[in-house]
Image 1 (spheres, one colour):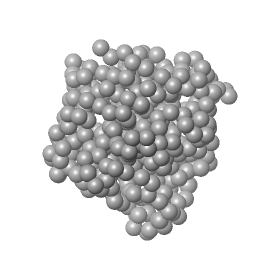
Image 2: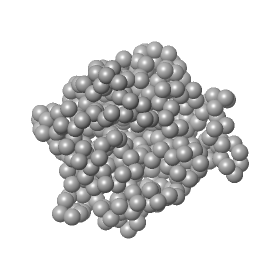
Image 3: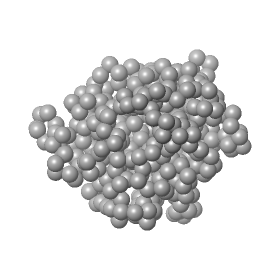
Image 4: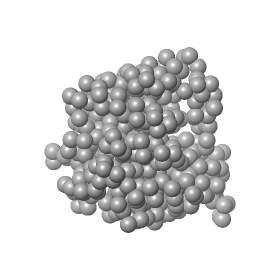
Length: 367
């Protein structure tokens, strides 16, 4: 039986029927019902490519160890909870493990076979992490697909089969601390399969909703960048991408003009990423989303589950009743960040310390 049950009531997240941070306000703003979170997509990471796996070796042993990675992540969970974290983002295909490698990702980190079946070793690690989070009253936002790995899926039928298999497996565990993120930043034009793009990903959101056990289904969304909201919010598109490359006219047309209307209409909650925005941009984008008809007709939680190490962006988000997610890429050095293996899951840098301490302050956690 699950110890942690996540539900939604209006714009609030609830755990076991009670709003998170019950009764808490900070600087005159409500905190109750928010879901402060951190991006930990490599918690079940592994690499099946023998030519790239050595890049993730631990400095003390000279080799990569997927089980050690899981155990060290689980060991850090009580600290995260004590600091006020109530959710972590994981992904069945991980995330970019080396800075600036969006375009070429030769490593093979996927819980799916090319045909959409689930790999037992990944499931063992995943279940261990999900149950540990459940024990700690931490919600998991579980992504299924990630650009850079979706090309390892054979075809659209495999993508659909993977969604069905992952969703059914999650329901069969009986765990109720999981929300689904179909894919990470569906509007990034690097996905190989059309069904993972904004024009069609709502089909997969709706598919998850049809899978039930005893009348229970999983809460589900897909995340986007902030680019689809910038024009309406009056925020200029960036001149350069995160890896430093100039933003081309083609990219502006493909992502900066993307419509996410059907996706947002289907989602139980709204996920967007704050990367590349400053606090003023965060403020404007959130105001724009909340003023949109899609939101006013169906108010739901809005959650940023990836941004940066810029704590000022969190301070800009939560007064609008939007929780914020820490994203710290790291340097593959077992110290910095949370996304470049081998990961040190502890609060091991000043950047991590600043984030966790600010969450503790906002949420009134003992820390």
